Image (cartoon, rainbow, N blue to C red; front, side, top):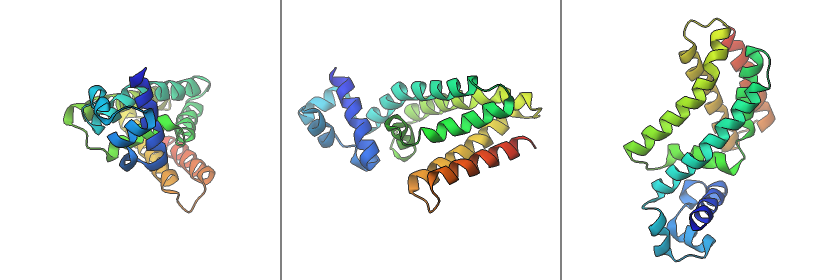
Length: 179
């Protein structure tokens, strides 16, 4: 239960203040634990982020996959893939996944996270192959680049409002994947 409370506190801290807010003193304060107790569960901030990703990324990926399953066409699957990921931007679980890029993770943790991210990209490969792409895996990685760029725009609080960013990303993804 303590580990779960620590992870929930970490999600809140990441949501509120990004990776800078995720400190062991802040985790201890949020959970009512002694700072030394936090170290019994996690050896570093990177370990907290790594565990959040291990717990939250599969849930996030399942939501994207469920949205894609509800679509009947390859284009519909691509649109669902983009829209669902962008809809999750404000979700506390998503903050943990985004925090990875800004955290000081060791090589092993980064590899695990890359593998999980590869699973997300693998979801869209079939739809791209169904559209006749010669290199559907490459197209999937580029499509994810569009999603990642839109995520960054939304999180930065760009001049555009989030719905404009979502529509632009969907439009770009669909026109781009049609060749």
